Amino acid sequence: MEGGKHIQDDFSDRALGLVSTQSFPAIVGTADTMLKSAEVALVGYEKIGSGHCTAIVRGGISDVRLAVAAGVEAAEQFGQLVSSLVIARPFPNLEAVLPIGKLLAEFAQGSQSSRLSNQAIGLLETRGFPAMVGAADVMLKSADVQLSAHETIGAGLCTVIIRGAVADVAVAVEAGMHEAERIGELHAVMVIPRPLSDLEQTLPIASCWLEQPQPLRLPITAKQPAEAELVALPNLEPLPAQLEVKQVEEP
Image (cartoon, rainbow, N blue to C red; front, side, top):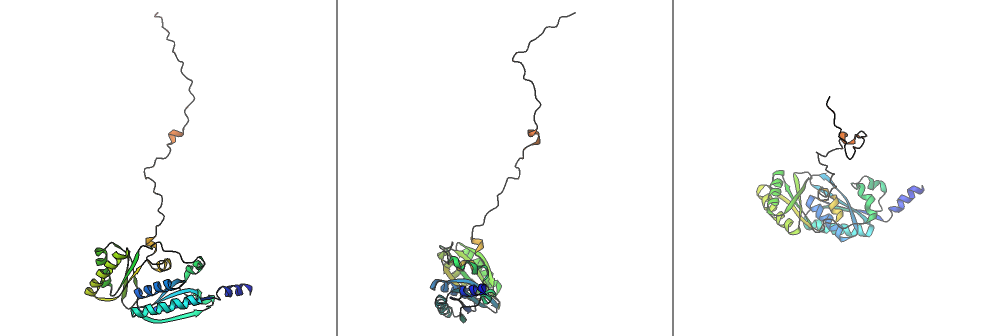
């Protein structure tokens, strides 16, 4: 009983906030707005098909309410809002089944500044794979950006994700928009400058931009100590400094 009471006390002043949209770029932009409007943490996305995506945040009750209100406003501006919800004092079992994962254990450490604070994220969503691939090709050729990943959310919606300097990402996304419209259907775009670490960690591209420890590479031709070098030489008596020469008498 005491253990259960302790767990309940830990969740007594917390809340979960959910905002749903019909576009992956829209949900990422909504999540960015929520993170920057209140002291909340982004704990994951839920993609249920047909283009529906939900961002889930966690924090104090008042902060979550502020964040959800800001997220709803942003999603409405994008024209992609589906629904929203605030759950005050959720039971631990409810959070256990949501797409929170290991991030739940890291909330106590607080939000940290992003290692990509001088970078930007660009997202371009099309309906149809060829339009996304064509847009990605043009974006890479039009500015100094890197292609990080792509995301599919059903209903034929595909999102290409790029990273780079803010100006480069903006130029690349604009070029990609024209190419996507030429090939097929452009559905949504988003440019997020200076993403926070919570947003960065939930995208399918964060790890490829973080430095990974490289294995130590040893030369293939590295010489091992030769066995002959380890064999001790036999003890030899030192030669005298001067050798005495004896003459042999002839018979």
